[in-house]
Length: 397
Image 1 (cartoon, rainbow, N blue to C red):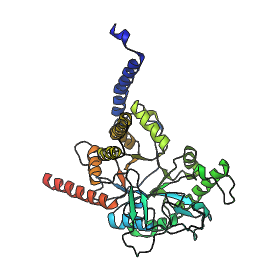
Image 2 (cartoon, one colour; image 1 turned 135 degrees about the vertical axis):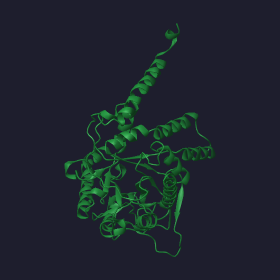
Image 3 (cartoon, rainbow, N blue to C red; image 1 turned 120 degrees about the vertical axis):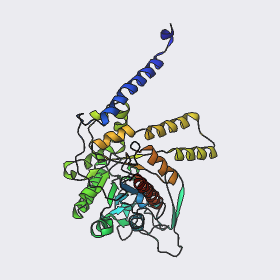
Image 4 (cartoon, rainbow, N blue to C red; image 1 turned 90 degrees about the horizontal axis):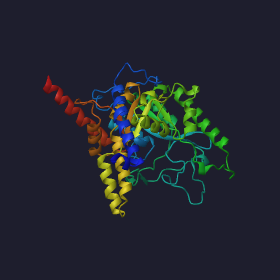
């Protein structure tokens, strides 16, 4: 009688839980089993930077060059990260100017970061030549989860300028201080609502994709010219564009998982079938929502009038999903993938992530690195952890 009264929803829930317990646990065991014949895995070689304390996080990444310390995506930011804070992984975005120069910038629309003249109606990167590009503002908003205003520390200093991708690659090849620096390039396409030529006519999808292919060709040419093939990851958020990056002509360039591929991986992990999924890319860069960030978001929501219980529950479930991927990361690393998490900005978050992804009782991490907007904080944290672990080694010996 009890069984008859149970509705279909309960049976579905029971089936899902049973599937999860059986197959998810089975997959977790398969992750560390070398005898399992996996589907295709990435085979492109990748050279890690070498440091004495690299067992902590061999990849120390700065988001947009460290956008909360220096003007984002500028040479000042990149030099500050690498030279002052031992960062070895620079994340950036690129766009094309009107004269087809590859410029490092997050937004195609320059209104947020640049000082535009009132009489000049242009605001998109593609409307300017390299020489016409405006200077950056001395103060502008930046950030994802928190509203932070970048403010130039010295009022009299010269405003920063947008830089060319070629300038960054030149440093990576010719400056010995940049010899271990890796560059992650986000190959964004021109936004669909900005499909306008200088004549004001709508661009067809074919024309937009042709522009994207031109950008890929120009970036690829720079990569090969400066011998950066083993030191670059690139990706596109859009599926069609990302598939183009996987084409044979770019086979020597490492790629990041895009959002679609990452969702496929996580879904297959939850049902225990990740080992059947072919992995076409090499760098798994996932967002991470720490308990520290979650609490800060809750406080912010309360200040703004709260939020529904359902919304809070969904955010909490999303946080737990992102935090409980240890088995997935072991599996991906066993198949040759590089794993980084973003964005980890406070010392509390760094400590939480470090403890969350420890490999057993050792200080070694399941992930290869984290990305931050505060390079100085990350450098300080790693230095402290390096001293702590070297102290433990001396005691054991």
